[in-house]
Image (cartoon, rainbow, N blue to C red; front, side):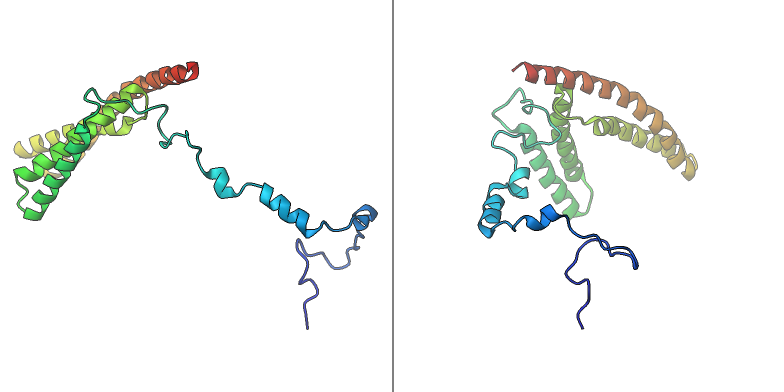
Length: 195
């Protein structure tokens, strides 16, 4: 036996509720021909077409305008530094001795990354405030922990004291970096609006 409401959509009606008859105008209208419906479907853009960026759209969602160029622009030195550093890091890890090759590779990756992040941040292209504030904080954290270890402090202090120093240092570095980025971003937006 077929269900009574199998062809209906919407909310089920309560028992005992009066059934509303359709309006006379709605009954008088004939259904639209299939060719008209198909033509309307062809005219409507698909969702993929609406979400597809135009030919001149920016590819970077966080950046405003064009990416700032390095002083050595045609040469990709930052990218090469990151690549060489990654290879050095991989070689150092595979050796397993944690020697100078590993630290040199990590240093090269760090320098290459800092190069373009500082340039993008100071130009107002994209904010890297957290990363730029975290790097000196992490270096200070490591220096304090090593100093406490070399002084023979208890093991708990190697963790607690550097963490207590990290929060204010991070905040002191973060605030001016953020203000500098917001000023540069404002200038960049105004320059783009004038064009």
